[in-house]
Image 1 (spheres, one colour):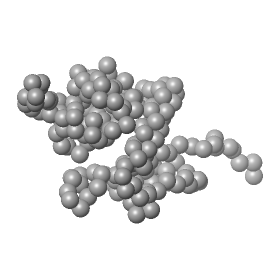
Image 2 (image 1 turned 90 degrees about the vertical axis):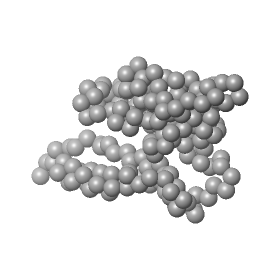
Image 3 (image 1 turned 60 degrees about the vertical axis):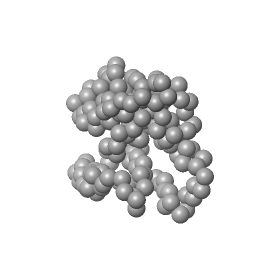
Image 4 (image 1 turned 30 degrees about the horizontal axis):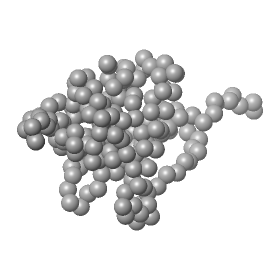
Length: 181
């Protein structure tokens, strides 16, 4: 399975999100992070991600007669690069968007299902804004957003930090119409 196929599945995307902080995790730990997904499903998708080279086995230990593996994400492999993205069809984009939305919905529902979930205190937000932008203005805004987000992606886990999921979505809401002045 290629990287696109591996990433275009909601459970595999959630595993990648859970592993993105650089820590090694066992499948049992991943099951605890994805309590709404069956253990068999998590094990199957961890196996696919490992077979596809996105997860690496970083260690093994015996636990009650079986071998427990610790996995680490190859972050550089868990991306769809610009060249691959450019080669995707509109149907591939449609499928990718559907997977992204299904993943986001599952993550959000898992958050709400946790004991003590408090969207107000946790500063949960979701908004949509319609912006009129020229191509240059759009390119500039995307660059600025990347800078802000990228600067924070290097933050590692710590006692005062909570992992948040940020999912920017951007697309033209209508076609540009020529002006008849």
